[in-house]
Length: 189
Image 1 (cartoon, rainbow, N blue to C red):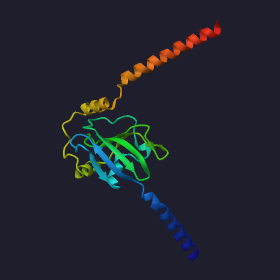
Image 2 (image 1 turned 135 degrees about the vertical axis):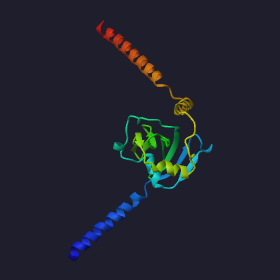
Image 3 (image 1 turned 135 degrees about the horizontal axis):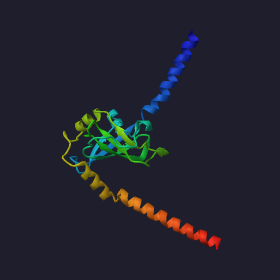
Image 4 (image 1 turned 60 degrees about the vertical axis):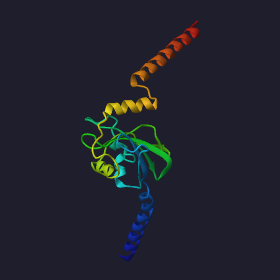
């Protein structure tokens, strides 16, 4: 009986000791920019559990490729730094005033600790909005149309609209087909 108790205590101690470094991993800081926030952005430092509701370090199965339905309200950009991946900030688009509760979108192909951050749409817990308000977000959603925010951010970031990408892909595809048909004629002749 004593031997089993000693083995059980040793196993428990090793689990606790191995789990200690894992508990230190989390969000170091988040910088939010968007309507109604200070010009330089709003910084929140420290590993607050509510920042986990941004969905940066969640199971990829908790995210959706398709956006949720309903009004999103204004978009805010959050640049999140993680304790376990210094120098690899992850950008998240946050919709704290969305109908049905806060939502976030993590864009694809963001490097994180030797891999990539899980991407997609995430339904946050309602406590995220309360936490953000306590830390400087407006009490109510600013009267900025969600479409206007999206149009402004895409125009300022230099991205192309979807139709332009499709047109570019069709043009490149057509050029490759033309080139392949010319190559085939040379081989036959």
